[in-house]
Amino acid sequence: MIRKGWFIMPQIRPLPPTIPITAFNRGQAGKIFSNVKQIGMTVVMKNNEPECVLLSPADYNALVERLEDADLLHLASERLKDFDSKEQAAIPFEEVCKRNGIDLPSLDFESVEIE
Image (tube, rainbow, N blue to C red; front, side, top):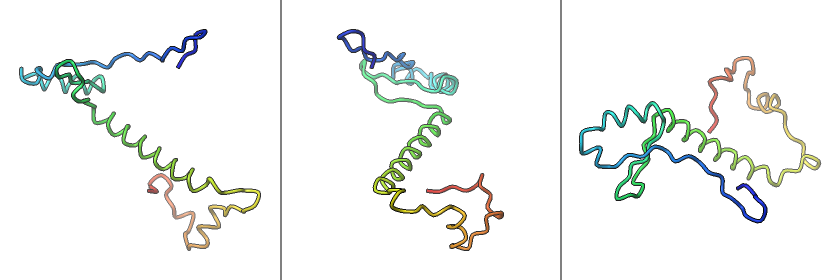
């Protein structure tokens, strides 16, 4: 929010493009999907209310990835909330690998996914 004197104004976002649900009944689905691929998102309206949001596959995948990253960040934060580096020593990554018999040079860091 933006503070203007005593009045707090919400930040204004442009409305995403909208289409009436009847456009699908008129055989315009191909055109609608093509537009969604170009612009990324369209809101489908029914009785002047948002009914659903159409996302391009790329935007959907990016959204899912951000949600997964947020979940992992929350999990890591929860696990570290009671960790005090002054009282507890962290174990270096190299030591963890050594203890678990993992050969560091053989790891391909670009293809490793941790879930």
